[in-house]
Length: 232
Image (cartoon, rainbow, N blue to C red; front, side, top):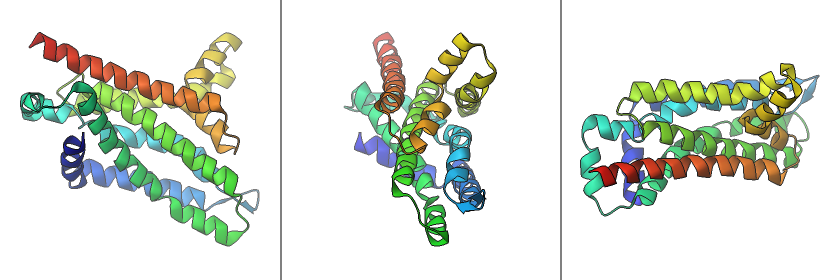
């Protein structure tokens, strides 16, 4: 919903989580992205660290999405507005996603630097940023779901951080895991999905998997809000 998106966005820009999130998500990947791999300038360092950086940054953005409303006592007022649960969830989701996408856009100097150092392959670069956007959708939706389950921003932050790190680490651990477990870890890992897209080959299975995880988390958040409304 536009009103929930605008109101949350205005409050977030002046918050400490905005400063920390922006600094973490832009300075580290930008510095890494200007490095060269094997003497050849490319975006591999940027895309290598992006999943972890987003996993560390997203909880600072999403912890306030719903938990702040509960903690500040404005959740009841928000429930009285003529906004359906799907509209509320969509508005909060778009607000959080916008913040992460703006932070991702802050890494574009890396692309300019690499392009100045040598010929830049446009395909892998576009695919990599598409993968970042899809991964941001997944992380924000998961953080929104967790934030809707608690009134504590601190709890929402640390639980989302744990989930995001495990989500990222699943793909890294898959190589050392038994075959059957490795398949499961690679299937659910956002890092594995992203690295597959960042190679420049956009597999529809990876895109659908990330969008499906996003949709499931948003649907679960809608269910949580609807259940609370029915109880009251």
